[in-house]
Length: 523
Image (tube, rainbow, N blue to C red; front, side, top):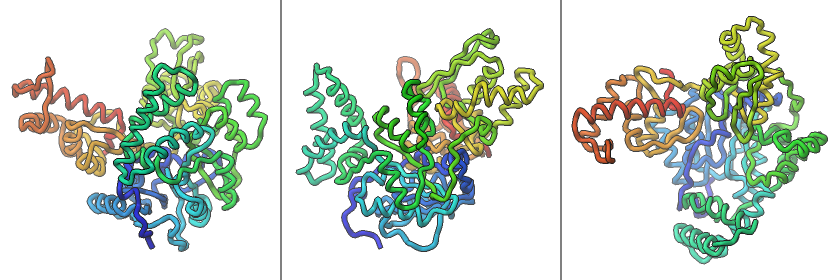
């Protein structure tokens, strides 16, 4: 039975977006890495607690027709919006229900994955207990739960800013007015810090500047809610342990490993053989303010002794900045740098450089380990497969690069293309999203913003229209003045020949951008 109490999320709806780190395929991959073999994403049974209007869970369901999805939320208006979207998309494998977490049905239904993003720190102790209870009672034996939450020590500074806003906005009932007054006090504080360069002033100014760029919904629900409960990592794990849940990992993976910190700190932390204690000390060092933690049943024997050869089970994607490598740099001993996630990898070994170049050229598209070995052998003209594997696993140490954040691990190949086919296609739910607004979900489960021209073009990307058709469609929309294309001097193009030429250029640019942003899919 749903609560009859007024819901602030009905008054000001929270923006409902996909969160890459919550995706079941990512959770499945991390589970495999640490010895928990959950069910693959394509056929998983997934529950999301606090699903809002389904911006996170609906794209998952749309991409996995064999899976089963359930989302619950106390915000009735958001659930109704999500139900309407599901009906229009014709999805049969997902349900959204208006229901509180506390009243979640205690039947025998079990899930492979339970997702609870952005809820734990914003609810009272009874609901936090219920979240853990649901994870324990409704997670399958090999299931994985994802819970995100605010953490200390990072939230000590943020709490001061929250307290300022709460104090100033407490006497205003209207959410819009509360947000307005909160912004007013932030500006007042920033003005008061003019010319002040103390460490406190710099930290405060930076935090306030970040908040000033956020929408009202974020300000109201993340900072001005009556409950905001940050915890230390060890406290969160202690809470999970009470419900016989064990700490599995965090996502992203690289936040877990002390070797990503300065050597002196890493050497001391590596003497500790308790992963939660290590994580807590790392939080102290990094001033951590938010965590995304994976839990599993305590019965599991979690594998913490990772081996460099474990990389052979996964697909690998380069997660860094694109790098251009000249031919002379391929000489043995010549250094080549690959940069990403705050680290720089310097490669001197020839086969390692070939491998990183191949991953770099894939532009973030995951590549099966064995395919990477084949490509390195072919390009380097190396016939000794074992030699290449030793290079990838030991010299280059791809697993260590994954722990460092330079590459990412995957368990399946995503359904997107890096090239533009003759009849480009996006998922039907992307076309639906583009019709509803400027934000769509790509095949990496990320938000992609579209401009007016891109939104129009997406509507025709159904695999039936050729590039020539698409160019003609853009020209027609320009001629009807649905939107304008600007030429030299920033003036609108009006000549039919110029419109045709500019439409062709626009079409090519947009389609390449769609490919880059993982929107184009296989027919």
